[in-house]
Length: 369
Ligand code: GDP
Image 1: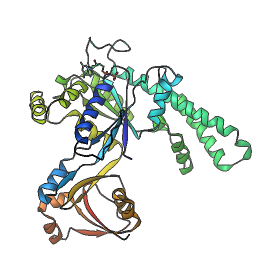
Image 2: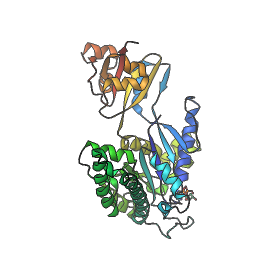
Image 3: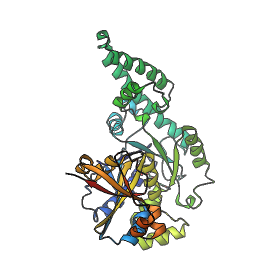
Image 4: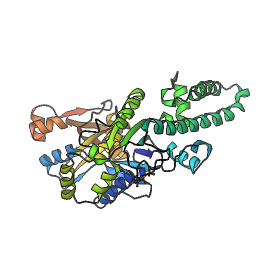
């Protein structure tokens, strides 16, 4: 199961356009990676990482395999969704399943594209969506309180503590503040919160959807994007500037044509790549590599992951029978030019069970079966 980001936003902000670009990329890649199954509302895309090709220039493996993450299309969020308007509740249910949220915000002006609230106003739009999400979490907490109230008479310590926490949380949400900013007091409260799968507890990334002519300077002069940036900064969230329409167009071109088009617009990297990278980092993920003659490959692990768990991403037997990991750094390989030179420099280490992996580690695992 991959890590995923759910795409949300008001109607007509460019979600489907962006998601189409994601799935087109996913479908194009699926030809090379047959293990990628395709589902209608999930786009499984390779995480762009130039380090893979740099390693392979040295290793010359038969195959280069990237690591993947998923985007899930969660259409249908409108004002009133938390009260069951539109297809509201069903979609809120879908958001509960994702690991993090990409919130697409309309920052482009186009009189041909109707805005549900009449004009382009990112701060108002974000507020509309966030309010729905907080309402929905409020309902979740209420339901949980209801359930617990029947059990309070048993005087179970754990339930009493959860109940206490739920009341504080309810109060917090009533102030229209996201659960993200709610402070838990101990591990039991953390566990209780986790069990609720609250939507506004998930990390969020804003995708500012702009017209393609605003991309070259990262929309530095766009009042809409700057308003969104201000809002995001206060929340401690990030903004990625994309043009959904351009991404969709780029997806229909071959690599050479796409490059010419991007040169024309004075951009060096597709917005989708930046979005994927930002989503990956939002999820708190990092990458280690395996590098052999058969295959150079990227693997996803959570930050602060220890060596046996990293081995387990390849195969559960690697984790169960873990003996040690042979580790060297990507930077050392590139600087010195070969694995042999890394060994000669004494930078090829053996690490045990407690080793905390670093982004860019190149690893080989020794294990018993
Ligand atoms: P959704 O309802 O959020 O999924 O929105 P859509 O992706 O269906 O987009 C709504 C309309 O906005 C479509 O006609 C798109 O072509 C248009 N659109 C999307 N992104 C852009 C953009 O960056 N610039 C302009 N001018 N139009 C866009």
